[in-house]
Amino acid sequence: MATVLFLQLFQYTHSLIIRFFFDHYQTNDQHVEKIELHEYKIELTEGKSSKSEDLYRRLFEHIPLGLYTTSQDGTILEANPALVMLLGFPDKENLLVINVKELYINPDDDQSQHALLNKDGVMHEYEMQVRRYDGKVIWVKDTFRAVKDEDGKVLLFEGSLEDITQRKQAEQRILHLTRLYATLSHINQTIVRVSDQTKLFPSICKVAVDHGKFGLAWIGMIDRVTGQVTPVAIHGEVHDELPYQTIPLNEMPFKSELMSLAVNSGEIAYSRDIQTDANMSHWWEMADAGGFHAAAAIPFRLQGEIVGLLNLYATDVEFFENEEQHNLLKEMALDISFALDNIEREKQRKQANEALRESEERYRKTLDSMLEGCQIIGFDWRYLYVNDAVARHGRRTKAELIGKTMMEVYPGIGNTEMFAVLQRCMVERIPSHMENEFKYPDGSSGWFELSVQPVRREFSFSRSISPSASKLKRNYIGLTARSKCSVPEIRQLSEQKMKTNYSMISAG
Picture (cartoon, rainbow, N blue to C red):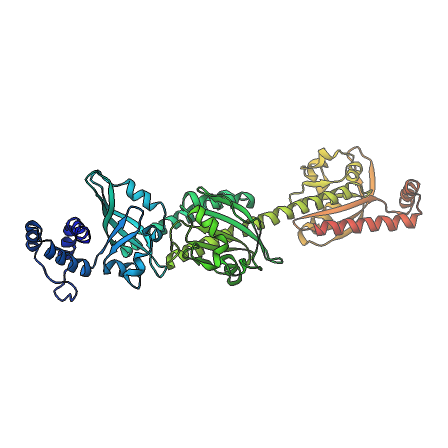
């Protein structure tokens, strides 16, 4: 049986061995002896099984290409030294006690390979990842055939494994960078378009899965007092649930995992494969169910303080392995932090505007309810604000005053002493005080005490009927009747109200 097995394997693999031999043969190779091709053909043709087996053994033992035979259930029946070395096992005996399926990173590879067998029962150059004895993951190219009996029943599989890790790493490096660039680009587009944090986070997670091709992405916000991380957004290709509602980073087993490392260091933390990472054992069940391997915890900040983490899970092993990828993830963290700062600034701006609006509304109500007239005049001499008392004193409605110039409402006012005082205040930005007799268009007049105060880009003045002894007495008598206060008390109250009015306007 051993002789038949070796000859069968030799007949299937001799063309592959010969091709490899002539492609890779070195004259100084101490492990491979030069054997002419016609010798193999002669030995096989003449049926000299003993010598053929010897030739096969020599090639089988020394060819730098992994050769194997497995049973239908995956048990390894035979392996050459090159395969033992490729898979990193200490010796052949340790390799022969395992099932080949235990080496697969992706459990689906077993079914996928056999589904692709052609009509002759041959599988050509299937590329997949396997795990070495030391835990390192490598890429291999698997070529095998099914050996059948006379009735067509599969007895075993014969094949070869070739290490293609370097080529695949170069290909994957480009692919991974492309995926990260796509993720970063679409996150930036999302940041420009979305200004609401509650919408931003789900959009970022969706971008990472849809454009970055990550298996799962989720964002958790950190309570720096309790050390708890609360998931606020999650998106997965097929798996969109987490096993934990809250994650206490100050407690085991979370204390030594990726997120804790990222928060404590302020830097991005990586795992080459969370399915073999002891510090991530509490995530193993989820990782196995979702097929997740490499992972990264990316801290982002608000006003310089870490407030959350973007967690990415890749279905590839060692996804986050080179500096270019790390730099892209750092840029991603900076962009998210920038977005949060902008959202916070906009929030504070709106709050300040609302507070200002409420404050202005309070001041406006206060000014509107004052007995003294209060008005704000712009540099172009237009009425910007007047309270009810001003409209009453001027014998105009507020609608007739607002937006009009003083000269439009009261023709000839530009030639009065009062206007000269106002103009001096407007130009020199100094307060003034005066008593003025105002002439109305109908020929009547009224006495007013004017206090003029410059405010920012405009100036205002408040006025009330007063001066001259007899008129002052008559005026205060009228006020006393309404407020039941003595003349001195009314004068004091009036002055206090004016001062309050000026201080509020100046502050605004």
